[in-house]
Image (cartoon, rainbow, N blue to C red; front, side, top):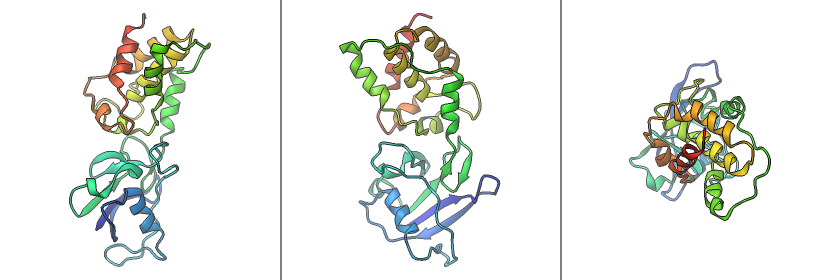
Length: 226
């Protein structure tokens, strides 16, 4: 199998493509494929040229942290949850997420996600006793990994603008359910940083690795009194 990777030495260098040949079975994940390449004694590309180790992020390897988010064959996915059997063709193409600054190779800087939450003052307020009917929506919204896949695929999200994307809608819905005193300011932030910019493409729902129903979060926030 061939693996074509968009590489970049650091944030200031120009990106380039490098292709590797590796033995891989259909039951391997993309993360296992990257491990196999990196854990060889010496790494050479498909042309026999010595190559530096491939830089990418991984933590849990169980679809629980979102660290290994990248673009695989043109689709934003988690490397640990993407099996080779589900990809087409004999060449796998790997790229870093394009909506975030590249640190090196497949590693990007996603600190902008938390910075946007801080700007919008999306924080937990006074404790609100849990109601049975709210347990399901809270659990669903809380599954968000902040991986950035929904932002990568969103046609409305651009780097550094005022629209914060689907993960922000889910976060505000979760915090509003948990807080006794934050519903109104969260509703205002939601209106300014999500509702005003969302075109309802819903590509975020399709790409979410946790299957979060962002529509439900949107509906809950829209029902709150401004």
